[in-house]
Length: 274
Image (tube, rainbow, N blue to C red):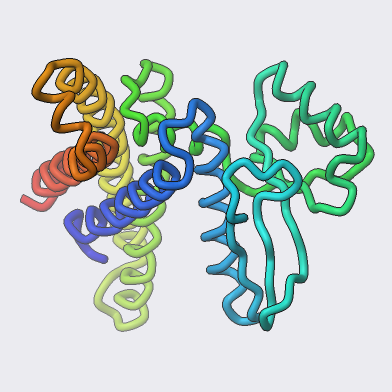
Protein backbone atom coordinates (compact mmCIF):
# COMPACT_ATOMS: atom_id res chain seq x y z
CA UNK A 1 0.00 0.00 0.00
CA UNK A 2 2.01 2.87 -1.31
CA UNK A 3 -0.43 5.75 -1.50
CA UNK A 4 -3.16 7.45 0.44
CA UNK A 5 -5.92 6.20 -1.85
CA UNK A 6 -5.08 2.63 -0.92
CA UNK A 7 -5.16 3.52 2.76
CA UNK A 8 -8.54 5.13 2.20
CA UNK A 9 -9.87 1.84 0.82
CA UNK A 10 -8.99 0.15 4.12
CA UNK A 11 -10.58 2.99 6.09
CA UNK A 12 -13.75 2.70 4.01
CA UNK A 13 -13.80 -1.05 4.66
CA UNK A 14 -13.78 -0.35 8.39
CA UNK A 15 -16.61 2.17 8.03
CA UNK A 16 -18.56 -0.35 5.94
CA UNK A 17 -18.15 -3.04 8.58
CA UNK A 18 -19.29 -0.72 11.36
CA UNK A 19 -22.29 0.15 9.18
CA UNK A 20 -23.08 -3.55 8.87
CA UNK A 21 -22.89 -3.91 12.66
CA UNK A 22 -25.17 -0.90 13.14
CA UNK A 23 -27.80 -2.26 10.75
CA UNK A 24 -27.64 -5.73 12.32
CA UNK A 25 -28.15 -4.17 15.75
CA UNK A 26 -31.14 -2.17 14.52
CA UNK A 27 -32.66 -5.25 12.91
CA UNK A 28 -32.23 -7.20 16.15
CA UNK A 29 -33.36 -4.63 18.71
CA UNK A 30 -34.88 -1.69 16.87
CA UNK A 31 -34.26 1.81 18.21
CA UNK A 32 -33.40 0.45 21.64
CA UNK A 33 -31.96 3.04 24.09
CA UNK A 34 -29.37 0.46 25.10
CA UNK A 35 -28.42 -0.43 21.53
CA UNK A 36 -24.74 -0.31 22.42
CA UNK A 37 -25.17 -3.58 24.31
CA UNK A 38 -26.38 -5.28 21.13
CA UNK A 39 -23.52 -3.69 19.19
CA UNK A 40 -21.11 -5.20 21.72
CA UNK A 41 -22.63 -8.65 21.22
CA UNK A 42 -22.38 -8.42 17.43
CA UNK A 43 -18.80 -7.15 17.46
CA UNK A 44 -17.80 -9.93 19.85
CA UNK A 45 -19.64 -12.60 17.83
CA UNK A 46 -17.99 -11.54 14.58
CA UNK A 47 -14.54 -11.36 16.17
CA UNK A 48 -14.95 -14.77 17.81
CA UNK A 49 -15.98 -16.44 14.56
CA UNK A 50 -13.09 -14.88 12.68
CA UNK A 51 -10.54 -16.06 15.24
CA UNK A 52 -12.01 -19.56 15.65
CA UNK A 53 -12.35 -20.58 12.02
CA UNK A 54 -9.64 -23.22 12.36
CA UNK A 55 -10.92 -24.99 15.48
CA UNK A 56 -14.49 -25.12 14.21
CA UNK A 57 -16.19 -23.24 17.04
CA UNK A 58 -18.98 -20.88 16.04
CA UNK A 59 -20.67 -18.10 17.99
CA UNK A 60 -24.29 -17.11 17.42
CA UNK A 61 -26.56 -14.63 19.11
CA UNK A 62 -29.44 -16.13 21.07
CA UNK A 63 -32.75 -16.15 19.25
CA UNK A 64 -34.25 -13.80 21.82
CA UNK A 65 -32.84 -10.28 21.97
CA UNK A 66 -33.92 -9.99 25.60
CA UNK A 67 -32.37 -13.20 26.92
CA UNK A 68 -31.36 -12.67 30.54
CA UNK A 69 -29.04 -15.63 31.14
CA UNK A 70 -26.93 -15.75 27.99
CA UNK A 71 -26.40 -13.59 24.92
CA UNK A 72 -24.19 -15.86 22.82
CA UNK A 73 -24.17 -19.62 22.25
CA UNK A 74 -20.98 -21.39 21.14
CA UNK A 75 -21.31 -24.55 19.08
CA UNK A 76 -18.87 -27.04 17.59
CA UNK A 77 -19.87 -29.82 15.27
CA UNK A 78 -23.50 -29.03 15.89
CA UNK A 79 -23.19 -29.36 19.66
CA UNK A 80 -23.39 -26.56 22.23
CA UNK A 81 -20.03 -26.20 23.94
CA UNK A 82 -20.47 -22.92 25.80
CA UNK A 83 -22.53 -19.86 26.66
CA UNK A 84 -21.53 -16.26 27.12
CA UNK A 85 -23.15 -13.26 28.77
CA UNK A 86 -21.88 -9.90 27.54
CA UNK A 87 -21.91 -6.71 29.59
CA UNK A 88 -21.47 -3.10 28.54
CA UNK A 89 -22.34 -1.30 31.77
CA UNK A 90 -20.07 1.59 32.68
CA UNK A 91 -22.44 3.90 34.55
CA UNK A 92 -22.46 3.71 38.34
CA UNK A 93 -25.96 2.22 38.38
CA UNK A 94 -25.05 -0.21 35.62
CA UNK A 95 -21.96 -1.37 37.46
CA UNK A 96 -23.91 -1.88 40.69
CA UNK A 97 -26.55 -3.94 38.90
CA UNK A 98 -23.98 -6.11 37.13
CA UNK A 99 -22.05 -6.69 40.34
CA UNK A 100 -25.25 -7.69 42.13
CA UNK A 101 -26.29 -10.07 39.36
CA UNK A 102 -22.92 -11.82 39.34
CA UNK A 103 -22.68 -11.94 43.14
CA UNK A 104 -26.11 -13.60 43.30
CA UNK A 105 -24.87 -16.35 40.97
CA UNK A 106 -27.07 -15.44 38.02
CA UNK A 107 -24.29 -16.28 35.59
CA UNK A 108 -22.69 -19.08 37.59
CA UNK A 109 -22.69 -21.44 34.59
CA UNK A 110 -22.07 -18.79 31.97
CA UNK A 111 -18.83 -17.08 30.98
CA UNK A 112 -19.12 -13.33 31.48
CA UNK A 113 -17.40 -10.95 29.06
CA UNK A 114 -17.42 -7.20 29.54
CA UNK A 115 -16.17 -4.30 27.49
CA UNK A 116 -12.70 -3.19 28.55
CA UNK A 117 -14.15 -0.44 30.72
CA UNK A 118 -16.84 -2.68 32.21
CA UNK A 119 -14.30 -5.36 33.10
CA UNK A 120 -12.11 -2.79 34.85
CA UNK A 121 -15.02 -1.52 36.93
CA UNK A 122 -16.71 -4.83 37.73
CA UNK A 123 -13.93 -7.39 37.72
CA UNK A 124 -12.40 -6.52 41.07
CA UNK A 125 -15.76 -6.49 42.89
CA UNK A 126 -16.93 -10.06 42.23
CA UNK A 127 -15.53 -13.54 42.77
CA UNK A 128 -16.51 -14.83 39.31
CA UNK A 129 -14.02 -13.98 36.61
CA UNK A 130 -15.12 -11.29 34.19
CA UNK A 131 -13.28 -11.59 30.89
CA UNK A 132 -12.28 -8.56 28.81
CA UNK A 133 -13.96 -8.77 25.40
CA UNK A 134 -11.28 -6.49 23.99
CA UNK A 135 -13.96 -4.07 22.83
CA UNK A 136 -14.21 -0.54 24.19
CA UNK A 137 -17.46 0.99 25.40
CA UNK A 138 -16.41 4.06 23.42
CA UNK A 139 -16.63 1.95 20.27
CA UNK A 140 -20.01 0.43 21.09
CA UNK A 141 -21.44 3.84 22.03
CA UNK A 142 -20.09 5.46 18.86
CA UNK A 143 -21.55 2.81 16.55
CA UNK A 144 -24.87 2.78 18.41
CA UNK A 145 -25.13 6.55 18.19
CA UNK A 146 -24.57 6.45 14.44
CA UNK A 147 -27.20 3.73 14.10
CA UNK A 148 -29.72 5.79 16.08
CA UNK A 149 -28.83 9.00 14.26
CA UNK A 150 -27.86 10.83 17.44
CA UNK A 151 -26.11 14.16 17.03
CA UNK A 152 -22.60 13.54 18.39
CA UNK A 153 -21.20 15.64 21.21
CA UNK A 154 -17.78 17.27 20.95
CA UNK A 155 -16.46 14.54 23.21
CA UNK A 156 -17.89 11.82 20.99
CA UNK A 157 -16.39 13.41 17.90
CA UNK A 158 -13.06 13.40 19.68
CA UNK A 159 -13.42 9.69 20.38
CA UNK A 160 -14.31 9.08 16.73
CA UNK A 161 -11.29 11.06 15.54
CA UNK A 162 -8.96 9.21 17.90
CA UNK A 163 -10.28 5.80 16.95
CA UNK A 164 -10.35 6.48 13.22
CA UNK A 165 -6.98 8.17 13.31
CA UNK A 166 -5.34 5.27 15.13
CA UNK A 167 -6.80 2.78 12.66
CA UNK A 168 -5.78 4.81 9.62
CA UNK A 169 -2.28 5.41 10.95
CA UNK A 170 -1.78 1.73 11.72
CA UNK A 171 -2.95 0.67 8.28
CA UNK A 172 -0.95 3.30 6.43
CA UNK A 173 2.27 2.81 8.37
CA UNK A 174 1.97 -0.97 8.57
CA UNK A 175 1.46 -1.52 4.87
CA UNK A 176 4.13 1.02 3.93
CA UNK A 177 6.51 -0.78 6.29
CA UNK A 178 5.99 -4.04 4.42
CA UNK A 179 6.51 -2.33 1.08
CA UNK A 180 9.59 -0.44 2.28
CA UNK A 181 11.22 -3.56 3.75
CA UNK A 182 10.91 -5.24 0.36
CA UNK A 183 12.43 -2.19 -1.33
CA UNK A 184 15.31 -2.10 1.16
CA UNK A 185 16.02 -5.80 0.64
CA UNK A 186 15.97 -5.32 -3.13
CA UNK A 187 18.29 -2.32 -2.88
CA UNK A 188 15.68 0.13 -4.16
CA UNK A 189 15.51 2.17 -0.96
CA UNK A 190 17.81 3.14 1.88
CA UNK A 191 16.81 2.32 5.46
CA UNK A 192 16.69 6.01 6.36
CA UNK A 193 14.32 6.70 3.47
CA UNK A 194 12.15 3.75 4.49
CA UNK A 195 11.78 5.15 8.00
CA UNK A 196 10.68 8.52 6.62
CA UNK A 197 8.19 6.89 4.22
CA UNK A 198 6.65 4.77 6.96
CA UNK A 199 6.25 7.78 9.23
CA UNK A 200 4.69 9.83 6.41
CA UNK A 201 2.29 7.01 5.56
CA UNK A 202 1.24 6.88 9.21
CA UNK A 203 0.50 10.59 9.25
CA UNK A 204 -1.51 10.37 6.02
CA UNK A 205 -3.42 7.34 7.21
CA UNK A 206 -4.17 8.99 10.53
CA UNK A 207 -5.56 12.09 8.86
CA UNK A 208 -7.73 10.06 6.50
CA UNK A 209 -9.02 7.81 9.26
CA UNK A 210 -9.78 10.65 11.67
CA UNK A 211 -11.52 12.81 9.07
CA UNK A 212 -13.61 9.90 7.81
CA UNK A 213 -14.72 8.84 11.29
CA UNK A 214 -15.70 12.37 12.32
CA UNK A 215 -17.54 12.98 9.06
CA UNK A 216 -19.42 9.70 9.38
CA UNK A 217 -20.56 10.38 12.95
CA UNK A 218 -21.56 13.97 12.25
CA UNK A 219 -23.44 13.11 9.05
CA UNK A 220 -25.32 10.29 10.79
CA UNK A 221 -26.39 12.75 13.47
CA UNK A 222 -27.60 15.28 10.91
CA UNK A 223 -29.44 12.54 9.03
CA UNK A 224 -31.11 11.37 12.22
CA UNK A 225 -32.32 14.87 13.01
CA UNK A 226 -33.53 15.44 9.46
CA UNK A 227 -35.46 12.18 9.26
CA UNK A 228 -37.10 12.89 12.62
CA UNK A 229 -38.32 16.23 11.31
CA UNK A 230 -39.50 14.61 8.07
CA UNK A 231 -41.41 11.84 9.81
CA UNK A 232 -43.18 14.46 11.94
CA UNK A 233 -44.84 15.85 8.78
CA UNK A 234 -48.02 14.28 7.42
CA UNK A 235 -46.39 13.12 4.19
CA UNK A 236 -43.26 11.89 5.91
CA UNK A 237 -45.32 10.06 8.51
CA UNK A 238 -47.33 8.33 5.79
CA UNK A 239 -44.17 7.21 4.01
CA UNK A 240 -42.59 6.00 7.24
CA UNK A 241 -45.71 3.94 7.97
CA UNK A 242 -44.99 1.73 4.96
CA UNK A 243 -42.58 -1.17 5.23
CA UNK A 244 -40.07 0.26 2.77
CA UNK A 245 -40.41 3.71 4.27
CA UNK A 246 -39.77 2.46 7.78
CA UNK A 247 -36.61 0.71 6.66
CA UNK A 248 -35.43 3.80 4.81
CA UNK A 249 -35.94 5.95 7.90
CA UNK A 250 -34.27 3.42 10.20
CA UNK A 251 -31.20 2.92 8.06
CA UNK A 252 -30.82 6.47 6.69
CA UNK A 253 -28.31 7.66 9.36
CA UNK A 254 -26.08 4.63 8.76
CA UNK A 255 -26.18 4.97 4.98
CA UNK A 256 -25.63 8.73 4.96
CA UNK A 257 -22.91 8.47 7.59
CA UNK A 258 -21.06 5.89 5.51
CA UNK A 259 -21.40 8.01 2.38
CA UNK A 260 -20.01 11.07 4.14
CA UNK A 261 -17.09 9.09 5.58
CA UNK A 262 -16.19 7.80 2.12
CA UNK A 263 -16.55 11.24 0.53
CA UNK A 264 -14.32 13.01 3.06
CA UNK A 265 -11.81 10.17 3.14
CA UNK A 266 -11.50 10.23 -0.63
CA UNK A 267 -11.08 14.01 -0.63
CA UNK A 268 -8.29 13.87 1.95
CA UNK A 269 -6.52 11.01 0.21
CA UNK A 270 -6.66 12.90 -3.08
CA UNK A 271 -4.91 15.85 -1.46
CA UNK A 272 -2.09 13.63 -0.26
CA UNK A 273 -1.74 11.83 -3.59
CA UNK A 274 -1.69 14.97 -5.72
